[in-house]
Image (cartoon, rainbow, N blue to C red; front, side, top):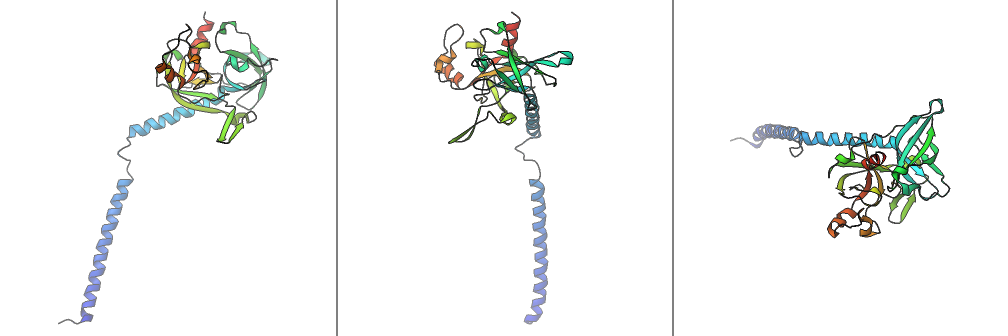
Length: 288
């Protein structure tokens, strides 16, 4: 019969062997689990990842274009925004640039004093260009002179837009909400006030609303972004911002050109959208 000392050695050896086997098995399973968890989640396909990357790339491209063609318009009252739409060379005397904005942005400047903040931070004096063909539309053109070469917005096909099409609204909000008790004025923020919001076309009104508005979109647009550009996903200018969501006038803000009003159901859909004047309306006014 074996004594206790004779039993201790075999038991110790067996314990070491078992511990080694268990440890090997654990390491093996951990390796397998690691390999499994390092694989892409079966819930996200390569196509979905690619679509996401394409969307990010498009956003980046459009935002870059927006920064290069959007200007801030300073008036004697409340600032607004605008888009550079034309350049005319004066030879050695530099260039004349045309900025498309909203009529209501410049309307309250009694002395006709205007300034524009450009994407490089420079500020130029500006003047209103007489445009009788824009009568009846909430659109205006102001001009400034500069030796610097600035990008000019490419006009898109706003008449080819469909609902749920992605759009981008750009401009300079006049206020920044810090919290529920604090709102900051952005008049002296310079280019830091610039903003681009994303959304989709929510409505294309079959009849024009007052002042030429007919393009509704889900983007958030703030006071100060009036006159700013609306782009498609190729960075082409397809509209001019001008009307905010939920106007205080209620349904009276949506009276059609023929004097009729939308149904309550349609009105509720319309008031939840921001509104722009399609660039096609601007173009058609010069073809009359």
